[in-house]
Amino acid sequence: NYVIVVPTTELIENKCYPPKDENGNSIVWKAENRKAGLSPVRNLFGLYGTFTPTLKKGLKEYLSKEGTKKIMCTYDKIPSLVSLIIPKEYRLLVDEYHNLLKIYSYRKEAVEGVLEHFNEFKSYCFMSATPIAMDFKPDALKDVEEYIADWKHIEPLTILPYKTNRAYMLTANLIKAYQREGYIKKDELKSYEAYFFINSVTEIKKILEYTHLTNDDCRIICADEDKNRRTLGEYQISSSTDAPKKFNFITSKSFEGVDFYSETGICYVVSNIHNEHTLLSVDMDIPQIAGRIRNTNNPFRNLVVHIFNTRPKDYYENYEDAKKEIEKDLEYAEERATAYNRLSIGAKKQQKSDLGKSSFLKYDKKNDEFIVNDMAAKVVLYNYRLMNSIYRSQKDLVAEYERAGILHSKVEWVQLDDNFIKPVCKKPTFLETFILYADMKYCLDIEAKQSIEKEYPFIRDALCKLGVEQVKKLRSMKAVKVALEALKKENICADSDIGQRLKTLLTIGAFMPSKELKAIAQQFGMKKPMNLKEWVELEAGTQRIEGKPTRGYLIKRFID
Image 1 (cartoon, rainbow, N blue to C red):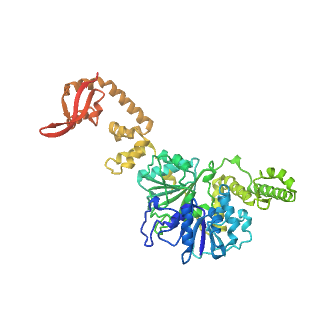
Image 2: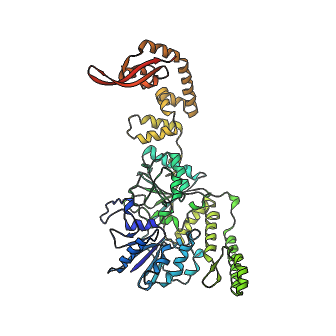
Image 3: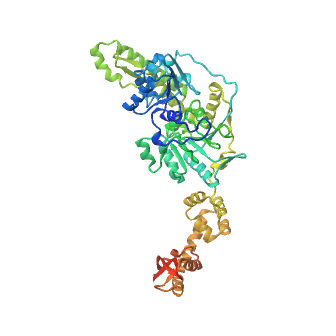
């Protein structure tokens, strides 16, 4: 019997409702069919979300049946679960245990629930491919014996740390490169799908709007809650079990343990120093992300492109000094807690409010005493290290990759040069885009054309009215716009001539077939009959000509 404790509901859904069957065939689960309870394909009870009476009843029925029990729950469900089972009959696996540190600041009760109850089980194992560094390990685990898996065969993990001043703009340029060409090329290999790991729904929305992506283009995997739905607006929230799209945006909801399937997808991690939620640790987060794509035939499965910016140099201090300062604050907190716990009941009442303000102390209501909150201190130190030590320069980030490869997962970290990503991320000049657009004349990729037309609304006029050779001579976007404006002024001067000529070609009250009126419009360099509306009022309709219904226009009046 096993209780498997994991950090996210997405991970449980991914295991209870796997995206692939035993034969490797894709399974698409409807959202309304994915719910907490017994998996329809595995002996696995998923316990997450609201612990409703119906869910509780389902769990009790599962526990009453014969056979081995496998319960997979989120961290916060442990206190409730131990009251429904006999813990000593179950082994406990706390998976992705490094999250005990990462999520403590905003899921304090869930983490403390695990740390308070883990030793009630028959056995326990805290497991992670990316263990917590010694500086940040919870005191509750300091006496737990540690085992390190010594893998004989290690797959190299190729990391490209790519520094830029505008992390999200570079990400948008990557997307546009995929849109223009349909793929991104590394050596002779082509990637047709992109997986962007960005832990900010707000920043994802900005990228979506800038690149004009639609729900058909992208999949957004984040917590399905009111705040995120409001932020995304018309964009839909998806699940890891939904069909993949060309562009996949993934928040921390699916950084760990979740399986993705793509034969050509590349993982892109995007970090913005001005949004601390997006800063990912090199020793814990990045290796987890690198293993998310499961297809062994994907040539990019062990490649991570890490796009990041760095903090201005006058913002950071020495990490060791910060560590000493926090350790000193912990000593003071412990001294205050010891003093409080020796006070009389009356004196405690006077002191309780003041001590409750300390982030490094927590109140034990059962015993009416304060104890040192080592986790709070370690979270502060962990975040400080990310903000002010690792992401302060490209050199520091690369050094952290090297350190992580040696001290933790024994992965062979290989840093690429810029030749792979730099040409792709560099925004093409207007002339390069125009030549590509001109070559798309007979291309069936309508989305690629529309993407260029959205970025340059005048590009179609430039091709039709100026032509390729003239634009090549003008070269710049500014010169092309000036030429089009001059052409427009010439046409305005010739407006009266067009009106006079139309009066000789058209008859008020007559019905003219669309084909014939289009031919007249083309005489004046226009594509459609309705382009003539500045000079003549037209009314679309259908009339029978020689017994056949014919679409055309009624000539109502000339506009002076």
